[in-house]
Amino acid sequence: MNERVFNKNIERLRNPERKERLEIDRVVDLIFTNKSIHSVLDIGTGSGLFAEAFFNKNVAVTGIDLNPEMIEASKSYLPDCKFYISKAERIPFGNKLFDIAFFGLVFHEVDDYLKALSEAQRVATLEVFILEWNYKIEELGPPIEHRINPDFIKQLANELGFKSFEIITLKHLALYKLTV
Image: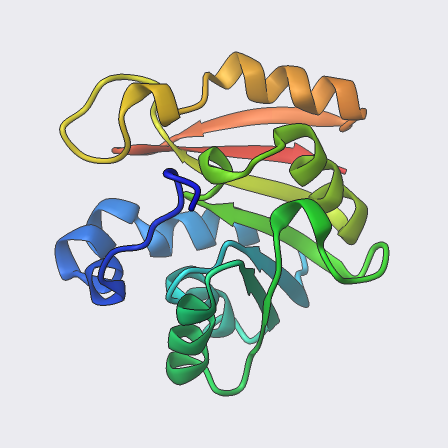
């Protein structure tokens, strides 16, 4: 099993303190600022925390995760959304099917960063967002060797030809906005 994949108690993902640290409402508001969004692909949806916030904005939400237990948890919280077992590197949907593709604290877990970002770019029409841990040693979150340097994400975005790259600094995390 990939040591970077979250495989602990799913309910821990919905812990109130964790939800507060994730700044879910702020992240979603930033994603929805100044644009009309009708569909979101939540890549690595986990227990569906961000999928739920997107759904509450009245958009069609589809989530993928490679952990079947996460998919079942997401379905139990959001029966009106679609969830599928899938790797980020092989998104099972056609080109330009979603307005937004979103990685919520999962990009550091993928096996092939370039392929995963390329797949997100392929299915998104507007933007790809990557929410990640700050690249520094902290008490919370994964160890530094599992965190991603912002320069590396920018390099990937440039290599794939994204039109723009922006880092939005949050209290505990960083939100990367890549325009398709």
